[in-house]
Length: 414
Image 1 (tube, one colour):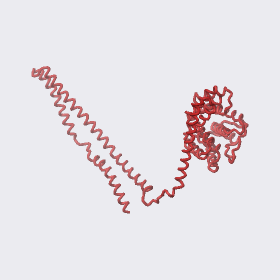
Image 2 (cartoon, rainbow, N blue to C red):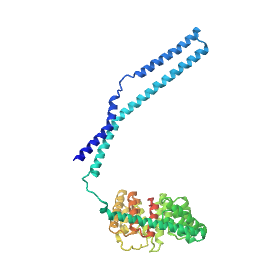
Image 3 (cartoon, rainbow, N blue to C red):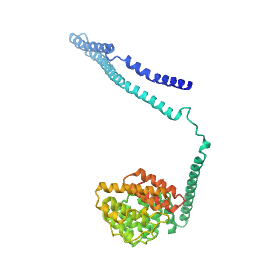
Image 4 (cartoon, rainbow, N blue to C red):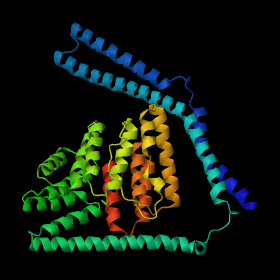
């Protein structure tokens, strides 16, 4: 009990030390008190003006010469100017004091609120009767966090060292196209998309502007622009498309450019042609199918019967994570925007619940990240991205895919 009395007394002492000058200043300042200093200055000012008039009269009487009168007039005018400045200064000072006096109650109330909030925090977190949480009881938690941090640090260090070694080798053998490709892919996996542009551009130049390398270069530009397909990237993609390259990134990112320009229907058409021409075991197929389905639902576009390919099933992944079936898509096309939004939210929530039960599903996590981005929930998209990276921390290929997806959607890449 003694500790509470001491702490209470100290709190009151500190509060009084802060509040007393505010209160005293407020009571001591009397706005209606006569300003004797200003009255005296006004009288001085009147005397100086009379002196100016007297100088003119002395000139008329012949008492002062012109030179003497000018000197006297300058001196009197100097005194008038000085007195007038002192009057204005005192007036401004009085206004400032009045303003401070009006602020004193606000400062006093704010100080009291801080004291009350501080006492509340202490009662909740710092009171002496709270049980201890010794470090020994948190050993497993601390060790797990430390090991995870060390693993990430060691992996990043080794990856950076390998990238540096590869860069040194390419300086000695700059015509190694596969080396430039590997360097660019490695830099992309490390989230260094701007540096990857240089590597892929070297591959483009030394390959005679090969379409596949143009697609890689375009992807690095898009990643560096946080998923936005700018003029440079679109130009590279269109050139790659004319080259006859079958790299799926070409049509996918051209469709993304259409969607970003507001032509979602053209993007869906391009993506459907891409998946229908793809091999059934393509690793990127589920992600593009998910993008088609989500865009179609969001825009109310009927795609029933247009997708002819059957995507591969992911091992140990329940079939219900593959998204809405054809009947649901047809029904969504007939819904109002509010009904469609409610349906989307329900599907996203169900997908999130299934991934919590069965997190070993990279395609599911990719679709969840994209779904949160589609419904404009960047915080949940970031959380899903971070969870997916932690879940598949040992799979560099999946990490690169998740990073690419995050950059495309404008999600900060760790």
